[in-house]
Length: 192
Ligand code: AMP
Image (cartoon, rainbow, N blue to C red; front, side, top):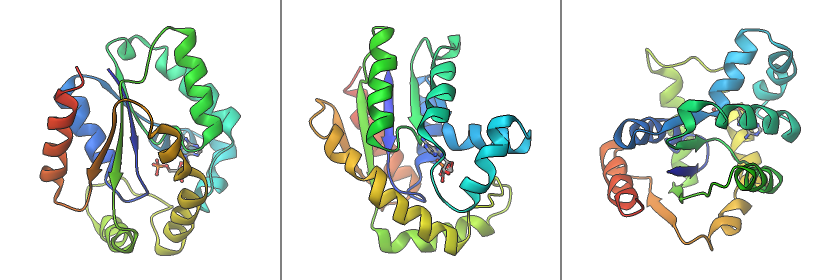
């Protein structure tokens, strides 16, 4: 099963992708996490991505294409995967279509986590204060606002790109985490 998770920063994509990974036994791929690891490891990709991420912009499409292509070819993706943070614009969506076509695979479902933008600031502020979570340089209010703006400009148009897919699922992301997970489970259980 191949799933795409769409939603603005702070919508809970990472949390729900982890839930789906456990529940459905497919691999969670977070491009944000992979990029943060590259930054930490000071790899050539990380060196380029560091400043871009810190200011809340998107890392260039060609770099993302390379990392996503290599990642989905790994054997832990044979059974399926959930993409959390990719694609983020139409160029990336088209690249993904090409990558999947080459290996004769299809997107089984797209899940949009629908969240009221006005509550996102509160969530991000809360998250940056939580203990035991990944410390993120881009989790401050100023950068969060920028990330939201970039999302609205570049990623929101993907909703119409994917809305005609036969399994385009809109989930109300405003409830508590377990309610959102429950709704996702019910909907994905019908997919396969
Ligand atoms: P995330 O953890 O998904 O919120 O991603 C954190 C940051 O990583 C984003 O604000 C971008 O700077 C970068 N990033 C993650 N995924 C992508 C992508 N598909 N395209 C471009 N930049 C990305």
